Image (tube, rainbow, N blue to C red; front, side):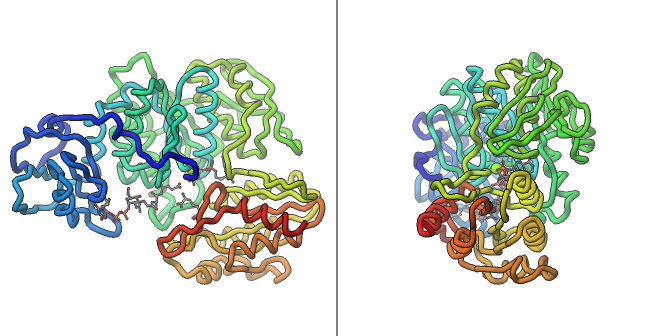
Length: 510
Ligand SMILES: CC(=O)N[C@H]1[C@@H](OP(=O)(O)OP(=O)(O)OC[C@H]2O[C@@H](n3ccc(=O)[nH]c3=O)[C@H](O)[C@@H]2O)O[C@H](CO)[C@@H](O)[C@@H]1O[C@H](C)C(=O)N[C@@H](C)C(=O)N[C@H](CCC(=O)O)C(=O)O
Ligand SMILES: Nc1ncnc2c1ncn2[C@@H]1O[C@H](COP(=O)(O)OP(=O)(O)OP(=O)(O)O)[C@@H](O)[C@H]1O
Ligand SMILES: N[C@H](CCC[C@H](N)C(=O)O)C(=O)O
Ligand SMILES: [Mg+2]
């Protein structure tokens, strides 16, 4: 979020619509009051309401948005959308619908004049790799002259504008505002990360996807989804809904890009009506990689596609990044981009901040900061490091509070198994006791010696300890926070950047 404009798209060019024009898109239970009023904006947060806005009362995980209707009215809301029966003393139109959260997505798309009908919208889902793949797609599209907006974990980027986001896939209001600004600024394409939470909560309803992509499915977010089947089903919504309302764009065939080395792909293939493009490194596919070789400065491989083959040399490291490249290549080919153009972009890309990012102060050992925060990503990154590490590997890692507890012992176990030294520490404890999270992680490493695994609650101290014990040729991996610039404790985000803390420790060491 650092460096981003503290703005959100939308407000510069205010859109106006009559409430009665919005109603036909909804499943309405009851209408009270005069709907012949102008709506100048929409908000789900009473604190953001401006005069003549429509306030949508959403029941959240913590509070019920219906509680804030008086505040919204006091701030000048012109109308309210609710799912509860309410009685107001003010003479304000009230629309009651069965589910305000879901209705909001449809309202947002209608209010912003269905922007995704005027964009080629690409959605990427999967446990790991979404941010990387969306960036690769955007880079290829931009290099080939297609102006492309981007929305995901890092931020929302529209041309040279960068807006901060709170969620990987923002709420529908923010999404549709973003898409509207993309259309108004001349974007032909938009690429977004579609998180399982967002798909499940309906944040992406109202989006007309042209291409959807699956990276992989491994364990995460079981706190929210409960089981892997439910988690897969949430991701499946991206595929089963593909092509809905796309009939009027017959020149654009909806595409589903699937990693067939992951068994979940056969399920997604079954539930999608889109044209499937497959990618793989283990078997022949529409897009696949052969002769993968790792070098200290990157990876090379032969990229084979239905549009010919090309030799790729790139700076990105690891087999997992070859998968990411294949996914992006399949999307780009679907957009008619030449294989040579794709190769050119791949040869220049540096990678996304906080993903396998080196902290280099000229020291004799390697320090890497990586956003691996799932068992699978941690294993992938450590396996990649093992390919080139000349000395010992130290892994500093923690697990987030208020998130999937079952991944904690697994991540500690992976850290200990693939490194000479694992230092278990804190990563956004949120409302949990940091020591309790560490204890949960330590349950996974009972069989390892204290020399092999130790815990240091304070993340700064953990990083310093790893760096101070590193010698020439060693590798220190600091995992879990990547690009994040905060440590969240009890609802407060304190400044914290693994890269800065590591840099400081390297300089201290001298
Ligand atoms: C569990 C979850 O998804 N929560 C999301 C939810 O928050 P919430 O349900 O707690 O909201 P709440 O505080 O109860 O408020 C309910 C309603 O009252 C309104 N309100 C509240 C206070 C007030 O004074 N006035 C007012 O009107 C709120 O604006 C809201 O409309 O709605 C918020 C507003 O959109 C989201 O930012 C928030 O995401 C939180 C931050 C979150 O951590 N979500 C995670 C689980 C998530 O969605 N992650 C995925 C990515 C995962 C991955 O990358 O793998 C994501 O897409 O980000
Ligand atoms: N294709 C992949 N398969 C497995 N692990 C990957 C893959 N791509 C990246 N990773 C690992 O996962 C980490 C996160 O990558 P990335 O940010 O691209 O994923 P994401 O799906 O966007 O994550 P999030 O769910 O937090 O948004 C990387 O730092 C790397 O360790
Ligand atoms: N999108 C992921 C990011 C996790 C990053 C990690 N640093 C943590 O806080 O657990 C989530 O919200 O679960
Ligand atoms: Mg992401």
